[in-house]
Image (cartoon, rainbow, N blue to C red):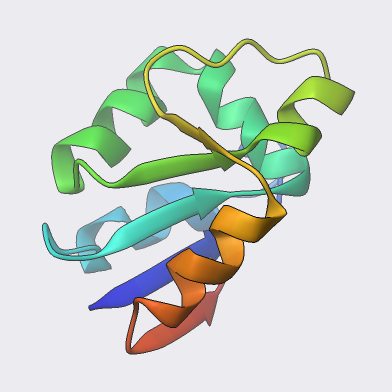
Length: 93
């Protein structure tokens, strides 16, 4: 199982679009920093959720950017540590 960590805005780079095909159903995704703006792009968010049901957003980053979280799991830093520990590898995109 891989944890895919995204930090860049989907509006400034195509990283998430270009890597969705590499995400398997057993993997997890964490959206951090400007990547939380994915939540404002329903098409991209749906593509991520089609790849895996295990999509998370770092609560403090979403809150700091005024992004509403409803369709994915909101986590804090302690839960992020657990998420990292629970996965064999972490890929930072």
